[in-house]
Image (spheres, helix red, strand yellow):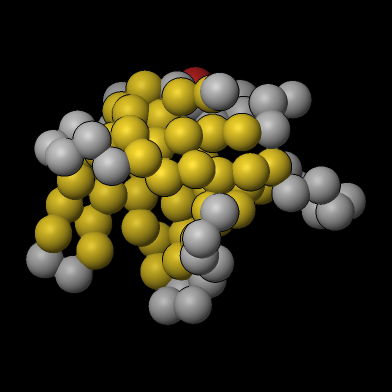
Amino acid sequence: MKNHIEMHRYCDGAIYKFYLVEDGAATRYRREDKNIWILRHPEFGWIIWDDIDNTLMSRPWDTPINQQDDTPPQGDWVSKKDKNSFVYKLRYV
């Protein structure tokens, strides 16, 4: 199991780091600086979830849920926050 994920934002090069949380619960990754999670949702598959605002922030762009496996898919993810939308590349480090 990979324990470190980076989300690279295409438009400005920002990088957000997520770390595997091993607490006996389902596989999930927590962002290093906020209570934001990469986790598997039963209806949407892998998503990025904001625990503070209880909102879906991002999901894979081109990997449908029926093609997702036990780890978040590498590749492009699209986010939405308020009126803004960004494209990121998820990669394992």
